[in-house]
Amino acid sequence: MRARHVALAVGLAAVWGFNFVVMDAGLRHYPPLMYAALRFLLAAFPAVLFVGKPRTPWRWVLATGATLGVAQYGLLLLGMRAGMPPGLASLVIQVQAIFTAAFAVPLLGERPGIRRVYGTAIAFGGLALLTIELTGAVPLGAFLLCVGAAVAWGLGNVFMRKASPRTRSGSWSG
Figure 1: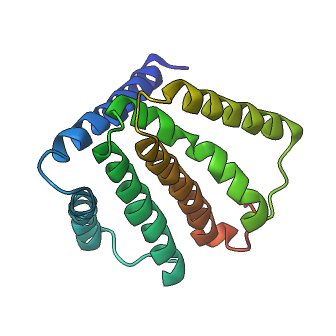
Figure 2: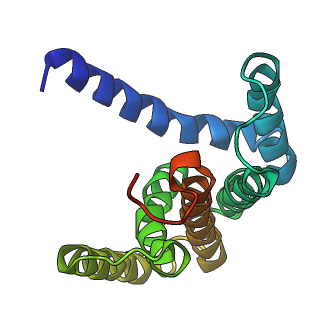
């Protein structure tokens, strides 16, 4: 891997991590759902001006927006407001990969290989250990809201795949 690619990956991770600090700061000034709405309004405005109409059915645009925009960020910000620290929230939300794989089986007809099944089982085990370790340190409701945000993100990922013109049949392959 080239040094430039490593630098880009490290930079992206830093921006991603710092994003949670910014969200925590924003929650001091705005209610969680208003903050999520403002975030996406500011992101959507330039897209409407410069990107144009999506080339996919509106049902997928709305489903993706509802899960990724409203549910994911709404639940995440509610969880952070309820006491989930930003660093831990950034870690817990990553279990979206598990939920994406889990939703891909019934909704896309994907057949996971044995490595994915083992990997998912290990990841769920890690989530269970994290839940046990956090008992009392972080409010359970805050933790569950962040896990709910990860569920919404996973479902949104599947909706985006369904929306893709080349995979609209529901298959992962092109």
